Length: 334
Image (tube, rainbow, N blue to C red; front, side, top):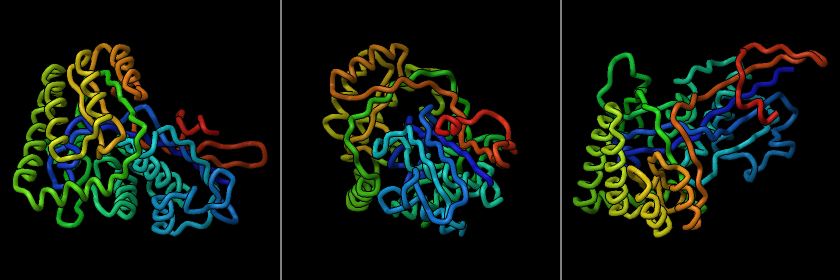
């Protein structure tokens, strides 16, 4: 029997969320919180030992299964990325499941192929959005969308509904961040639609989207120079711009304000409306305490996280043979 294990990380956005939907630049980093999945052939679809239903098998997973045309599988899921938090939980799930199912069917599992399939699953489920989350999760480390890049840094080009994105890898210095989770779940789709209506009816809002794009380019330059003070200041300014677009909330604002005295800068990350904020800091414990004091859950994270991984095992009785070697966080769920 063949068993495939795969895992993919969540992500957070340093700069560029919402504007990236309109083809503007964005920067995202993978985080050391992952979705791990194990799949094997079965007589019916099962998730964690239970019959598959819309409640335990996401629309993303159903889309990928239908797209590939796989036979029924038994799926074990270990999700360490909080859902509805802006940390790319659905992108991590989509990448891990796409990699596992593709490997089980003998299909390509290179990062670009998986990133494209995961993005299509995300788009089908949300109805709108950029490939930022799925690309960041598939590639790992750090990625940029629609920024000037060297030829050797280019990853892939994606087009959808008149928008296009060039995805490239970026060199990320060693940095420490603290993510603060409000615990408020906010669906991405309605917030993206809210910004869409605002920008279409208001030239001022459209100008804010353009400004977010420029802030993102300035942030990339600061990151290349390892200028954390400049990068942090741009993060804080970006939070103000996103607040003008109406995608922040009181809980996020309070945590951002509480973190700033101990940080280079802080902002909401993801679609907003709840979910998470992130602070760039060299005093993570101080920031974590400030976030807790405002009712949030802090996660201290560091840069340098690998992307999607996959491992195939052939079982024969009590013996098994690993086709693709190397430790995989997906093993933690086994």
